[in-house]
View 1 (cartoon, one colour):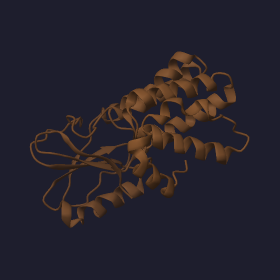
View 2: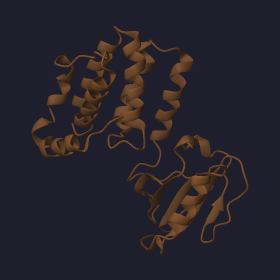
View 3: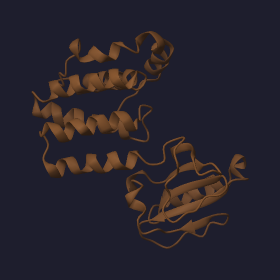
View 4: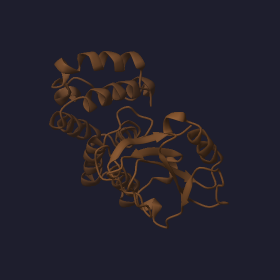
Length: 231
């Protein structure tokens, strides 16, 4: 998905006077995907406006888009995958539990995709609800009573092991408890300075495909900063 920096800056500056424009966005835009890059850029622009708008307006716009998509099954598959990229992906500046949930609600109720095709969207809708800023942290197998950095890693992933050393070396995190939540298979990490836990039900809370990802939990157990991809 292409999120253009210049577009993001302009939208941020104009957000105050454009928040209501998203509601009828698809009345004046088409879902012509004959030029796939142009269509993807248009959808990226829509996502950026939607995430900066009141939920009611963005929700109405998503309904408008799905109403168009239902008339073209190919478009339905294309734009549904872009919903993932825009509103679910941890790399997207438009990541939003509320908007992703709205999109999944339509995907399920529209009946265009089969039950098995809907399952990944339903699972991601569940995952995205966890560990949002300001909400109580959900970390299987861990009690939190002090400010804690949680790194979710796959034991079979080389970059996940590199993330242990990279985060441990950050001076701004020196006074924070370091906990590595280990998933998958492979030898247990041995990088010093970390507490290692391996809960059996980690995949019920965390998307294994997002690893390595880290977030910070305050001493009172609420999420201070949400998921960040650890590169």
